[in-house]
Every structure is written in C-alpha cells, then in structure tokens.
Image (cartoon, rainbow, N blue to C red; front, side, top):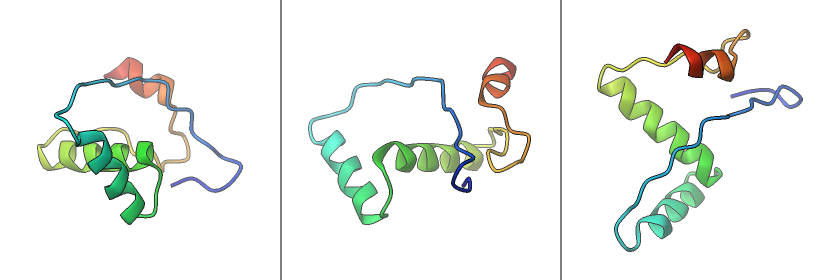
Length: 73
C-alpha cells in the first residue's frame, strides 16, 4: 500500500460484536494471507464495500488524507 516511511494514519475506529470463534477465524485468515489482522480487515471490508457499490477514496493516491476522507464521508 504505502512505501516505507510514508505510513498512513487510520483514525476511524470500527467496533462490532461477532459470534464465538469470529476473532480467531479472522486472525487465522490474516495469518494465511500473511498480513496483520487490522490490514486484513481493512482490505476485505474495502473489497466488499466496492462490490456493494460504495466507493471510498483510493488510499494509494499520493494525496490521500485519512482525516479529510473521514470528514467527507
């Protein structure tokens, strides 16, 4: 996503409850995808939002600002 030294600051916090075993399943899926759990969740939720026709700003764009994107939503 971003090159080293150009880290994004994700400021929105998303919380929800899941059925027993949900967290363990997400951790396992992230491990299999060789990524962190938060990055895995961000990726799959963004993919599903796009599939549902909901657009978000491109986080790979050089001028992406998480704060501005949050305020625009």
